[in-house]
Length: 163
Image (cartoon, rainbow, N blue to C red; front, side, top):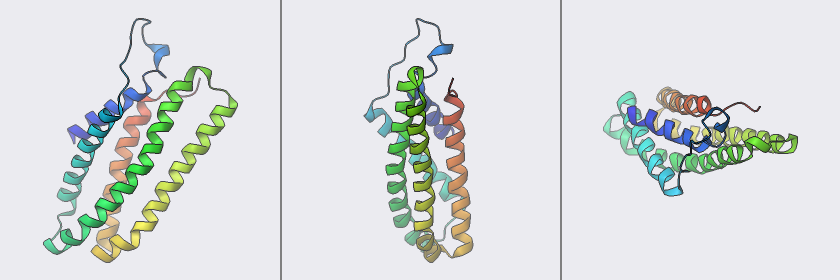
């Protein structure tokens, strides 16, 4: 869990340009590279797997059917996360020159990401339900949602509001 929190804090560095109005004029930040982001994602995913494993306490039979489905689900989540990371980078880049058109574009992209996330969960529900039963699948979605909320809180707390 500590690694998850630390990783989320590092993601906040993506917005370092956007928070420059509160930083001293001499402060600079090194932007994260794609390989840095990939490494952090690997760490986050490993932590998520540990939390899911500890919380769900799968039987051997459940584990055998759950993890292949989850790997596909996580891969599809990463595709959506790519869009979100790009959105954060674009917001940081445009923060000082944000106009109505750019704000509208960011909003449309943000809601599109939220829609994709919701659709992904809906698309995978029958697979998880078949593998675990409805009650256990619902528990997994609770865990998954809580992990997503933790990441979202960490990210949004580091992103300044539009001036």
